[in-house]
Length: 305
Image 1 (cartoon, rainbow, N blue to C red):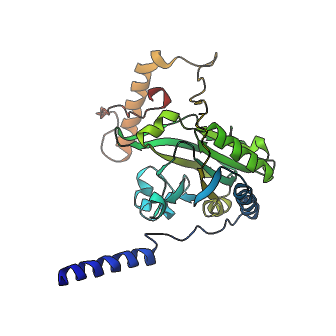
Image 2 (cartoon, one colour; image 1 turned 135 degrees about the vertical axis):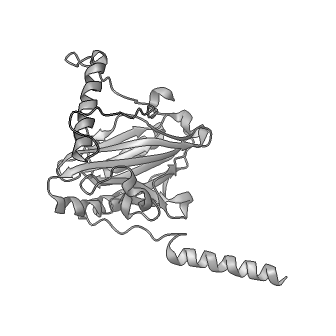
Image 3 (cartoon, rainbow, N blue to C red; image 1 turned 90 degrees about the vertical axis):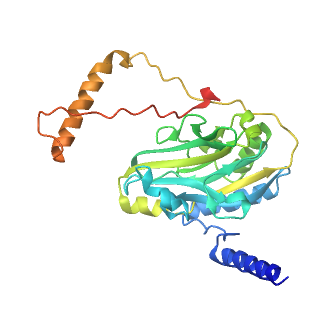
């Protein structure tokens, strides 16, 4: 009996400490430091509250990987240098644990990011992945083309919404609420989840890659601006799915056919390897370099779904 009491007490202390430390039931993200984004979030939340069929059931944010508890341990393992930061959208894991970029999106639900276009940079892109499924394990297959610095839809002031869903009715309701909140329809970006992925209990992740801000001070402020992320739960019964978008056609009339350039690529790679080896004192100039062959990295896109 004493053992049971001690176990119960220890469990209570553990749960209490986890709540106190923010590991369980973490506090809501801070209000966005961008006043226009914060105002858009308030207006959108009010519209959703007045919309039959949708409720806000989770609140997160767009967060830099190295600023995310737990996930920060992996931040510099993906080539994430100081001038090439990664961010991702995060929600409390399972609704009550530490913020996590990996999330399950139910068939009629949607995830909505409200944000401002990043400050001037050489490149940025939002990519949504099917990150993991119980049957396939780690997949990390992108669902469609990235939304990047050339294709992002935004208002004249740079505000935009990024929506991830598979449901036609839900998207229509979200779009209507956004427009009623003052965001132009032309500033909405949609990523469609292929409907059959819901049956596999797929976990999704949306990543923002940024490369070389023109002004690092502005970039640093953007990385900590707490752009809001809202998980919308649907109570309507409409299961009609949006058509998947996939990838756009890559071929262009002026594109080069690289199939005949394999030997040239190999020669260039070996020459570059020799220069690097000499620079690090591993090879004498002119000495042959031994290349290490790597197996292909099997990242599967929507054609594999």
